Length: 253
Image (tube, rainbow, N blue to C red; front, side):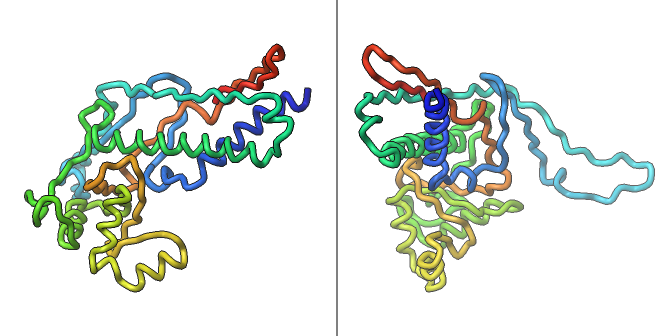
């Protein structure tokens, strides 16, 4: 009886461990909201340059306002799951640590899909006409020739974030390989930091993250303090059932 109760918790804990390993979501998400619903309506504020200024307020004068509204459309949450089916022999005669590797792998796949969802929202928006602004190399305000990338384009891209700061960059392996070949990014201090901590940074101060969710020849830059809101309806949930007739252990994650 005790094992029947503890086994689902072990699955949930191990899957969560795999999800948190190499998880880049905390580095690109500004805040996390936990809800108890299938849909969610967030809020937004889109101030003009004048609205961002804290002007002097004369005695008796109206105080400038920053308007906060709810978004026009609900955001539907995606539900994803995986049925884990293991035979009696696979559980009975194998070490628990080995079984845990499989569970952590499932967690890693969940994490990969969540990053893909985040990238999709950045590029296409969440249905509220809030897709990120896109720039093309060779088209104003980014100089150069389309299909090429050098330090000048990175600096010009960085400049578009004022008054925010481009502190995070997402790109594919192929694009990161091209970026790291730029002479300015071969600064000895950059290599020393990578060798000492395993973290790649650029001279612009942005943290580099490699992910297959971003297409080749595309760079996503963001200020992770303000860009994304992670909405979830709870933690990892495990539904557990045992089929005695076939001696199968089934767990829905």
